[in-house]
Image: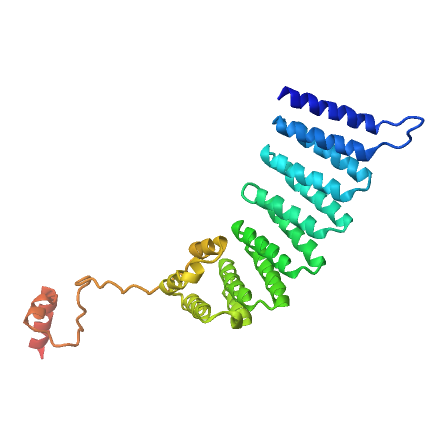
Length: 324
């Protein structure tokens, strides 16, 4: 290991010598300096000194850029991304990928630029999904400028799935529409049908049943028979507030075999709550005494229970009768 380190340091000294100027050497020798820094990076990598390897790659890239060798400058940054991955230094990967892509575009190789964005996004997708999302967005823009529609649709699909994973349903709906537009340009009706299902699920996750029904009416003609039947049942279930029918529709085989993000969305989608039925009123027997009309003829029992007149009043009635 020590021999590799010494060899790398010797290459660095040679590179620094190439960059010096004198009375007879007015311009630095960027070409040879870049080559020496690249050799030093290889030695440091073999010696497992990854931080110094990354630094030498950055210096080599800068020398290539000064020499207007933009493709080689971008390639050095591309290699630095892999070194950062080995170091678990994910914070610098997005910045390196964007710089590399910019250099590839300036050289006239946008496909290579989109490729490095895609590679960096895959590295960041699990640990830094927000950074991966931005890289995929840039990749879509790069390839669509070059009329690479199929590749753009692939990157747009990754954008939409990450948005669904992050719960960004409003933005995911827009991303899916953009993906549908790209597939329309190449006439891929099968892909549009699957995306129609995804768009309906995203709109239901947003809580917008009207938008979900509109998406089905707009793109449902691209769905196959099973997809149409499932979406009709699903929308009918939400319209009727039928949670059991909705659960059966969401458990259909083709939904469970969609991309992982959409399958999970269908699994976690809030079901309709159902129509609440008012409970019957409980009747309490003998809660109050029965009402008896004073005009009704009383029975023997009722006569006994009727209140008696005072004794003085009875005597007064007898006296009055006697006077008559």
